[in-house]
Image 1 (cartoon, rainbow, N blue to C red):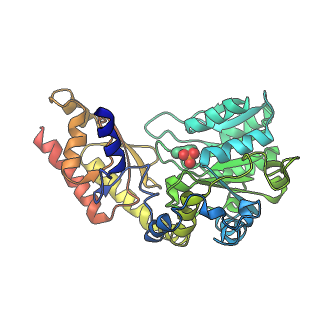
Image 2: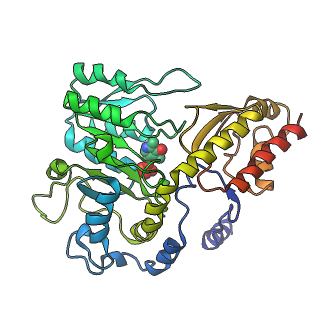
Amino acid sequence: MAQQESLERLTALTRPHKGMINIMPLQTGSILTEAARRAVEVFADGYSVCDFCQGRLSEIVNPPVKQFVQELLPEFLGCDVATLTYGARDGVFMVLHSLAKPGDVVVVDGNRHYSTAVAAERAGVELVEVPASAGPEYTIDVDAFAEPLRSRRPALVILTYPDGRFGNLPDAAGLGRIASEAGVPYLVNGAYAVGRMPVKMSDLGADFLVGSGHKSMASAGPSGVLGMKAKWRDVVLRPSTQHKNKEVECLGCTIRGVTLATLMASFPEVRERVNRWDEQVAKAQWFSSAMEGLGFVQLGEKPHRHDLMRFECTKLYEISQRVRERGYYLYKAFEDRGIWGIKPGQTKNLELSTFAASREQLEKVISAFSEILTQYR
Ligand SMILES: *Cc1c(COP(=O)(O)O)cnc(C)c1O
């Protein structure tokens, strides 16, 4: 009986936040475009992306994977060679694993994502972190990389640009100059940059640029992109000795089916939207000021330069200490108002993204915060 019920739930899946204002950091950059929604239907037949595959994903002409991977992506990323991955973390791991030997050192910023640490652990390399400044800014000073790059002789240096917690954008081009001077290969983790804001690997002086399809490129995912300089092609994309068409580092092939189809179908729109980044930044700064006007503290860089933001909301936390629903009151209050993105139970530190919502919608978000503060005063 119980099993029958749960099976029915599976076959009648619903989207709980359909039609709501969306400020959830994980979702705002990956909401599918109309073209991608059509692609879901078109590529619903298993691995139909592979109907005309001759053995290499990046050579498939129909659908035009070859053009996407060999022409459009390199131009978009500002790199020589691009490849498809299962996500940003896979791109980071592929590079780590092909450039570093177990026991080697890799230098990274203190705002790194957990997946960078896990990738390093899987590759058996030691991660040396350049710490962020104290709060509330938590900034990364790239000049502090010079010393470890010199003294620790790392196999790779990784910069998180921006980090996923505060949305801080360190001086990536500055680190490019430092890494180049030290002769250390340089990877920029742009999981929250590629597909949202203009970012070119060549402008940053990087050897590698990683993006995430399901974070920032309107793909159903999991999917990702990895761009690199030509000189790394034979290292990172080296073929298997037994199967010349198959690359070792990605176990022969990566994303197929709906994940790839949606990534490609959204690409024309994604490529355009990065040109409107100035409007995104202006919107984020306006939102941050309005939040601070309510007494919340925006953590991270100010003025902020990214749609991803973290707020310290002591007043909301204090309310949670005296209401019956405890921390869940906030989630409920926002859900009742048609706003999606407050994590159930969270009140003290809120991570929000203004990328997908219009100004009018964000005004409703601000009003919601204001009403809640008044209601529980
Ligand atoms: C989410 C995230 C990742 C991992 O991205 P996936 O595409 O899910 O692998 C890596 N780095 C940062 C900064 C992230 O926010």
